[in-house]
Image (cartoon, rainbow over all chains, first blue to last red; front, side):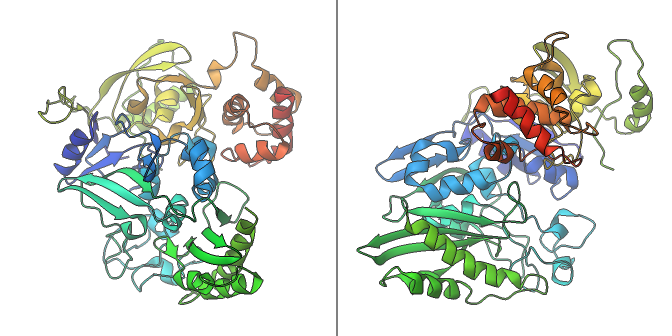
Amino acid sequence: MKPFAYTRAHTVWDAVAAVSAEPGARYLAGGTEMVNLVREGQESPDRLVDIGDLPLTEVRVHGRGVRIGALAKRVHEHPEVRRRLPVLAEAGLSAASPQVRNVATPGGNLLQRTRCHYFRDVRFPCNRREPGTGCAALRGVNRNNAIFGGSEHCVAVHPSDIAVALTALDAVVHTHGPAGERVIPVEELYRLPGDEPNRETVLDHGELIVAIDVPPTPFAARSHYLKLRDRASFAFALVSVAVALDVRAGVTHDVRIALGGVAPRPWRARAAEDALRGRRFDDDARAAAGEAATTGAKPLPHNEFKVELVRRAVVRALSEVEGR
Amino acid sequence: MYDSGQEPVRDNENRLSRRRVLGSGALLGAATAVGTTVGVGSGHGDPAGPEVLGAGGVDITLRVNGRDRALRVEPRVTLLDALRERLDLTGTKKGCDQGACGACTVLVDGERVNACLTLAIMVRDKEITTIEGLARGDRLSPVQEAFLDRDAFQCGYCTPGQIVSATALIAEGHTRSAEEIREWMSGNICRCAAYPNIVAAIEDVAR
């Protein structure tokens, strides 16, 4: 591992100042992602700024919804999160292992890097890691890669589970940065790769996620996360579906459907939502939503199966949430 | 092979073990010591300013198994390497070294974590418990006894991580069913596939 200096910040201001001042500085929260990235060479910071002591650990319910501190641990265990935001609790619990969940943070989870094998293995070319070197996944084993939102330069998938759930909940992140504070919808936090896959998020250097806000919505309480993977636990999603549903008198009043494991960011399945809104919430509508969720899919040579998996997963997630 | 970021091993106990002899040659090349930078206060944040350390060796104290252990590490040294290479606590194993196998599981303030994903410098103010800290003298812990009784291993390499993880799992109360135990042991891989016996050992203790 490359040597680096270490700063332990005690205030948000100090942390932002320390990272902003140095192009080679990066934030360090739980470390479950950054320590790996530095060890394996995808990141080579001159300095890590440890933000573990910042007062951002609270989960708080207030008039405008639920505010989740960027460093809150095991958010999925919080009783109010479980009651009000089941899709988020299920997504959080489905992520990683007990050991990782004990130290990982929501902010770090949102900013984790792709698990694309060719990004993770520095011996391969990767436009995301080293711009201009090419995309080894396009011609390699691309079973785990994107069927939506990719480009000829990158077909990586964003691996976060909670980002998918938060997208279905219309959540936003609050940031502090060298240019001040701002609010960004979770879905818009991530850039699609286009011809600049190395620019993964809209965040500036030194900009720190300090909190996640989940607004009160009529669909949050009746929500569900379905995660399909190669083994029963401790694996990233091949396909996941976050659904949040507001059905009144048998008719879908409003709905959110977001997909994971299929795109460089949480993929909002708007065509599937449109197939449900204003219609009776029945088998036919759910089948139509499943079909619509695959609209625009561009599978790669090894991941055609994800298209059918998306269709079935959406139908199943909608059926499972119905009884709640 | 990854550069583990070690400085040359200093033999505190004046004892030369086989692994020291084997290990020291590889470690010598990685030694760097550029000293410690001093923190500068800032008028806006914490009046004392952030703490600034490294990138060279930093003197730290780790509280491991109830004892304060002083050592000098670079910020890049993981808790796993600090335990194994510097404090001679080699019960904690290095398997994948990327948080996927659980062989390095230790307790930090009572919670199980992957020592390979933790920098030693991050846990200076925490209580660390390793597999060596579970027994009371010659008396094994209940989980250790149960692993013996149930033959819950073959090669044994993952076993310290399994036992530390199982100890935490039982304290967490995730023992209501075999299914729940399996789910909450998912962070510990056993390539010998001793899983049925591991679950049985945990059930014995939980019962």
